[in-house]
Amino acid sequence: MTESLRVAISPLDPPNRLLMGSGPSNPEARVLRALASPPAAADDPAHTTLLDDVTVRLRRVFCAGNQKALVVPGASRAGIEAVLASTIEPGDRVLVGVYGHFGELLCTLAGRHGAAVTRVDAEWGRAVDPEELVATIRRSRPKLVAIVHADTSTGILQPLEAIGRACREVGSLFVVDAVLSLGGCELRVDDWLIDAAIGGAQKCLGSPPGLALVTYSDRLRAARADRRTPPFTTYLDVSRLEAKPVSSHLFFGLREALRILEEEGLEARWARHRRASRALRAGIQAMGLELFGDQKDAVPMITLVRVPDGLSEPGVREQLLMQHGVEIMAAFGPLRGRVWRIGSMGTNAYLPSVLRVLSAVEAVLSANGWRLPSGAAVAAAREAFEASS
Ligand SMILES: Cc1ncc(COP(=O)(O)O)c(C=O)c1O
Image 1 (cartoon, rainbow, N blue to C red):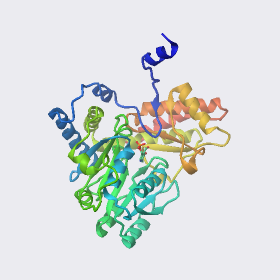
Image 2 (tube, rainbow, N blue to C red):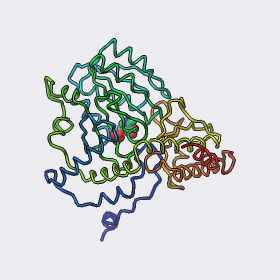
Image 3 (cartoon, helix red, strand yellow):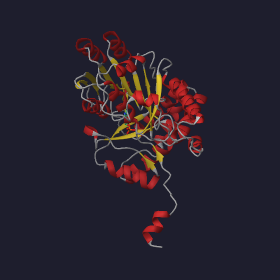
Image 4 (cartoon, protein in one colour):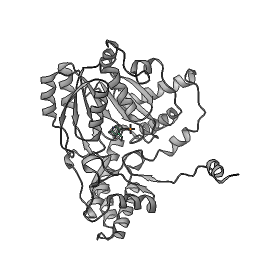
């Protein structure tokens, strides 16, 4: 047997990493076991029952009792693109609130589907001013307003309620990227008058990547039905996805992840993310490191840390990964090279994962000559964890 063939057929042996980056997080063990279930064809009644069950549970996580729910096989952006592509016709006016990389993505996708995009920006590290956005909505009355709820690139949370009310007042559709926030912090689709929200399976839900989770209102369905021209995409057309759901083996895992969430309780999961991030931030600061961004708007699922002068941003990440099996992430755009992003989401929004990443960071920083009080991070994290509920 040639060497290349031997390598090609050798068993898979992926490294076991602690995924403390911007997602995916480590899937729940029960989810991985559920993925070993035998598949059913898309038109098998067993599959229909599974899908119905998943969508009912999904609506509960979105707090979207009044909406449809869809699961789209693909990256999370497949869900975002499905919503935008299904509603936007060439020349439609779309307003986007931008305070990070994923707001830019909303602008790009809306533009690709022919929208005339205008934007209200905030500097990276702050949320968009809701009053400014509301005033712009009232003045410009766009067909659709899109914004990210929790931008993973900046670690900032965007207040949504006033925006939802303004959209309803003037008849705009309100679309929210909830890829990071779903399951990690308060999100109330019905109460906040959101017409479509897109969540990720791979961040706070503890499922692997590969499914986009979508919920949408009758107003959005009507906008799709009233189009003069069909969307540019057939695969990502919500009316087709609704009529002919796509099958995926990943649904087994998602259902188990949703069951685990229900056993824990949605509000308890939001609280667990808050508690884990307080512990993580206390540990980071105890090492003498500085947090990035306006902390009053900081999300509880990811923590941005300024890279101190004299340390190599990629070098530290590489040592964490290769020497400690811990993944943290680089930052995008204007923050690239200046900031690390440390996630505490899903199965890793627990004290043991937080302590492990802190000890690994402490070990790598001291090995790189950074002076810090030994053990202080772990002690501060434990204390903050005990003090919060
Ligand atoms: C807030 C947000 N929106 C959208 C995306 C895009 O997700 P995907 O890479 O799964 O398409 C991400 C990915 O990290 C995200 O964090």
